[in-house]
Length: 342
Image (tube, one colour):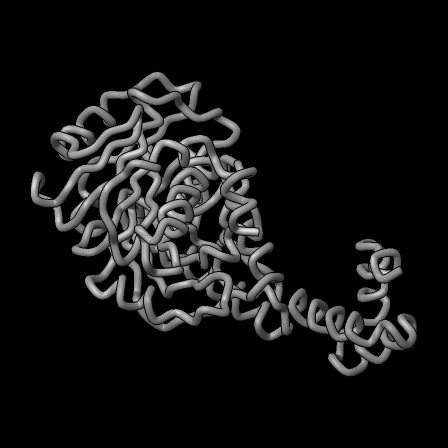
């Protein structure tokens, strides 16, 4: 599948790096849209290639921020069309940067494909370079320009299990342009949700934060890469990767993510924080009812036993988990579980 992916499904940008010189231990893919260069120190490191996808949607003509960002990279050591290599010795940065310019010299991205396409371009290039043994680590780091990465990030990448498909790193948000209480509520909501899923025995119990994940190059290609979406691309890719090699949780490295209100994407951290700050009071904030996770636990238990007798198993699951059978049955029918099993 990996060879087939690169020849059939990889983005055309990957064809431009066939003459790229150099070899690196690891790769980090970071999309940047309307960002300053403040993140570059944290995202560059010796032996690491930062694949920086500077992009804008085709419905936004503002490029001033990109011009300032590109000026920080200095002259290119190598260039092919809108892709260029900027080496550490020529800049004040800690490592090399492979710039994919989909903002100024290269075509902008379709607005509906947004960050998903930006991540796909970067990861596709990382896969191409890994296939040419120019990137040695089989794990691709995926982050965002608002994340601060620790100095031992590459060591953690190299130590990830090779049979897993993806890894999620621990995180915390730092308040930025929003009150601290909004960030606290949002984080508690996310952690509570994941804890509820774990309680229910869900195989999808992880936080979905694109800046805190790493992807195995083999499984990434089997899943045919990031979906081209303006938001939720990390969620849908992880959903596929969970079925291939599983998603592992690691305790290190800890990544600090910016907690800032934003409307650059239709949903996610930025819009969620904006909604919280717009509430009349903190008492108006809501999260998932605990009973929903009890019902989910019962439903998953019933699904595992459904090969015997779905009706009896549903009653048994409701009784075993002390939840209302009629409610569980109603939800079971609403989600057409019997049809799915058949």
